[in-house]
Amino acid sequence: MAGDLIFAGRLLPLWAAFCFAAAASAQDAQLAALHATLETLHEHATEIAAQRRMIPELTVAKHQLRDWIESNLDSLSDFDSEKMKALGESINRELGGVSIVTESADDSQDFLGSAGDVRLESQSGLLIVTTGVGIICDHDESAYGYKRVDGHWKRVWETEQDDYAPGKYNPQTFAAVHVWQPIGDGHRDDPPLVMTLGNEWGCASFWHDVYYRVWRVNPSGSRLLIDRAEFAWLRAGEYIVGSIGQDWVGKSAPVDVLIEFTERSVDGGVHNREAIRHFLIDGDNVRRVAPIALSPRDFVDEWLTQQWSESAAWSASPALLQWHGKIHGDFVAGDFGDTMHCETPDLWQVDFAPSDVKKDFAKEPDVYFLVRWSPPYRFTMVDVADKPWPLCKEVDAEADQWRTLFNSQEWRWF
Image (cartoon, rainbow, N blue to C red; front, side):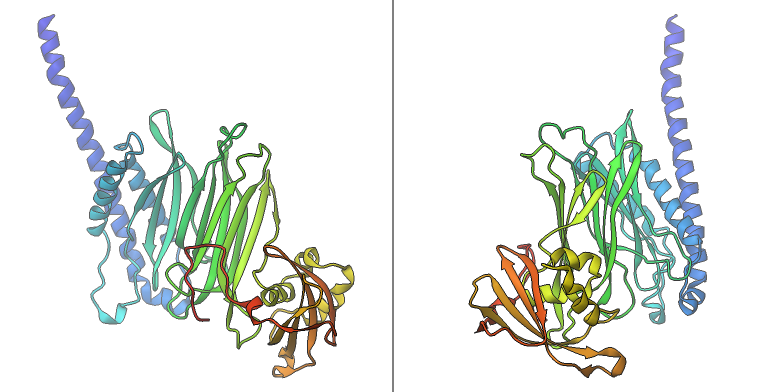
């Protein structure tokens, strides 16, 4: 009996060593396969750049990278920040030996064949892993969310760009990934929501599409609730900001999503304006609500550029559809005049001279918009006319000063 115990005591360490060696060998094989795929991507760099298209091997690389990372995750038993930091550093060191290094100065914008830094973080009960695979000019990033189930990390959410059909592929670069878990009585068992903010990057220009998306991460799978992309100015490192939350006092309160970025103004002299996207999520129902702008002029800009299906909600009368249809188009342009405060305290008049984009931007007669401004930032289009209102005579330059809903935003010249 004693001999059996001694034998078993020797056998268990040997078996553990064998299992560790087998796992390490499998991971080495995964890295070798990833390296081979990255080599294939790098070899096709000229073709990809010339034809402005991506090849399916990019998805292969994304999934090889993801699967290899997942094989390392079980070394984390919880959300210990120091262990996550150490694992992230270890992963990135090993990826440094897998990436294809480009030495030619002519290829300074060619990241094909490289693996970007991997980031691990804990948010509201989810382990968020962010990865990137090199493309022309940047890295196409993916993100994955994991929940601890039966002693292992189970992937419950992901976002990737894997459709490479013409006009479909929009590589993503994350500005932020936020996870929010409902709190308070009656909400503790509600599934978390994930919001991503970012842009589809390119080689030149600070104008690119920004995107904002929100998922509900149900046990049976994630559900995409908001998925929008809009042309914007990437003005600085923090070019899009957002928040997601809920009034914890109300058991049935909707989830509140607020997004802010900078977009083109219809007035080239104004250059740009703050875009405000505010949504309430109630179950699977998503609706846009005020604020939609932070000044009378920006409100008119938003009212003119959105489809009537949205602008109607900010209009006092359906009769305003005629004016909206007269100016609205795929591209609206013109010049704003002075914004006037009216004798009625909550009314402002905004002067706008449209340009006919079909006739070499020929100037058209001024149009006057009567806007009701209720605090803090609730605007309504009261009326539109081809002549100014006689009771709107006070020039109010401060009405259209730059504002933001996020204290992380910096003042800037437009």
